[in-house]
Image 1 (cartoon, rainbow, N blue to C red):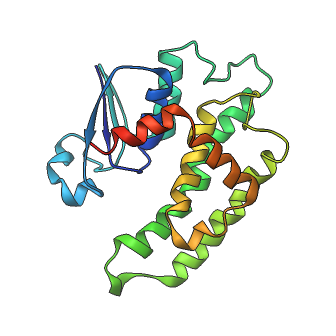
Image 2 (image 1 turned 60 degrees about the vertical axis):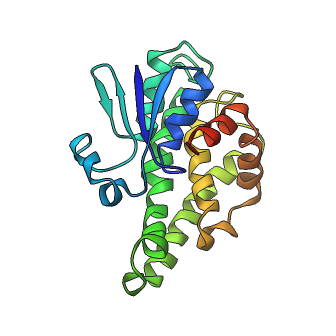
Image 3 (image 1 turned 120 degrees about the horizontal axis):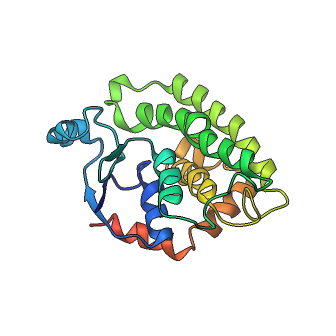
Length: 206
């Protein structure tokens, strides 16, 4: 049985969405955010204290985009993946890595210093600087969507799940929300209409 440890709208939403797209059976373990603070017993399961934590038999994973890649490879074939012999394979891999390492990383700094830290430890300069970093990286997404509905392969894939999550997170952060660019905003709104995304949102309510 697949088990996913998840916090509402955290990066674990990526594999949760992918599980729903694939129609797989899984157990969802809901935790308060951040679990290393509010569910200290979770550290015995995942010593990093991070979300997601994914278990599938002997497989244990902590990286949200990597879990999505694992799912489509392990439980495919599926059109949610781009195969090595397809033209967009390199771009597909690049978007998967870009989604977290480049696009989501600066958002975590904005999140921390606007919401998670006590008032006296918040850092407006860090929020401004890393917000600009995110928006600069968002240009690549905006440009890619200028003439297409999806990032690669002329179809919806886990690359879209992974990038759309970063946009979903940005919309929850006031310093970023108003600056999401038009193509990216329309793309996010379209993808949020997918039945699997709607189901994932319902599942995370508990």
